[in-house]
Image (tube, rainbow, N blue to C red):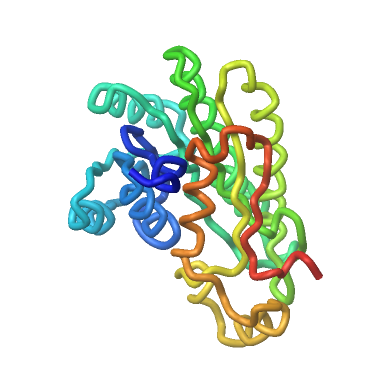
Length: 255
């Protein structure tokens, strides 16, 4: 094994990835598997395609169905993971939704739905996985999916619920990182910019046309370009890194 392989290897690790049925979750889960991790996908809907891709690469993966906003379902899913894998070393908290609405268009119920999935769901997963790590003496890594939207306000679309949820994720991450330092559990967040996934490309063309001049690189990122960032945060290479928000946005938030 080379120096870089040793530093960034996830060999022997069990990694949970939420919301990995498609998009960023699917691509990053495949990358984590190629780095040696056994992948467990937890999401509400089927993840058969992702499992086939990972197994097609010669790696291990399985799927446990659960809604991350439901504590009982999450606890049952994690009990199944512990039964099958025996340990949980990594959590990539990826599940999320977005609604493009003005504040006056958005209902309180819609606002709560976005907060529930993007923030409360990540908290539920962090708490449940963190308890398993603490109880079993596992010095694990948690990576919460945030967004550049947690640091800036996107234009021209309005998405107050999404922005608020991601800002909450960033500060929740810092809070958990400080609280769990004594247990050797590292907690960081990843903040992508516009990435070429269904969430970003299945929008009116005028939105994409408006975004491009605002991105200094003048393109969306590829999901594959997030893999190295996640591997860093999950691996021993980031042994002294916790409570950080890693922004991967094509220079968007620098201007």
